[in-house]
View (tube, rainbow, N blue to C red):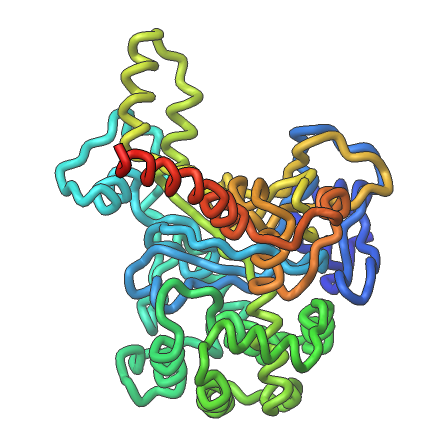
Length: 419
């Protein structure tokens, strides 16, 4: 029997049935909320599941410069990390890259004449691109154009008013850009697409339940998140955004989202559950090049060429010793969760919100980053094992070492002066 759309795993693609068998959602604690747990052995390197987001949107500043996207994942395992990913113009629905790999390389290197070998490996099909006939926003295919129209775009399409500064949606977007400068860490348009999805939905209650599954924060925590996103003047800015948001999108079924408290909660939800993603035709081209069978000399030359162009893209619940990682290898909004090690039944599946360098810092430093950005204190095995270490950041440790070295240097200086 087909799963209900309200089942979070109904957003998985390809291996949706596998996801329901291999993992389950459990309540962990009031601090961590919900988490994903393995229900059967998962082998290292195995794709645990692939999912579509509930909503996805380009960051507003970046949409002007055509290079970044963000989404909210339907699985309720907690707050997925957001990372700044410098990318190209993307499909307005699935965030698939629209630039060809060579165009991407030319833009990123600032070399209009940059030529890539093996251009046939680029998968971007510009002949399939489609524009909304009313507002001209670009999609990678007819399928995405229709999917966007079916889910939210009929509500959000500004039509011929796309460049009218007085259009309610344009006023909202301009207000957001005026209070949240790059690098962006959230997007008001994720919230707009959430509302538009409910407004267009035949089963509004089902979508409302899906959105409400995300972890709730206390009023103080929500205020702290909003303060971090908008800065010192956040209260006035938040009220301005709420007023414009209401003017543009009010929906009676979601009336609680438009109150001051409800809007703050919605803002905090997006701020902590949004997943910054990267889609790059250049990255896809590099992977295709890696798969080529070449003579050793040709491989060396191609790898040397790629080294000048390519930068890797990196992005559960958090652990400082993760057993899984997320990636976007299909060049669109499909998130892959892959095991980094064998995972036993009953074991929680965790990713890391910290990069490799941050994970090597002191426990106190890691906690400082996580507390400031995600409002929780990590209790992973690594943090528990290091619980007795001094409450000192890595920078403070470095400073202390420098200070300890100063007397010797000063004494040596005196000796040299005496000589």
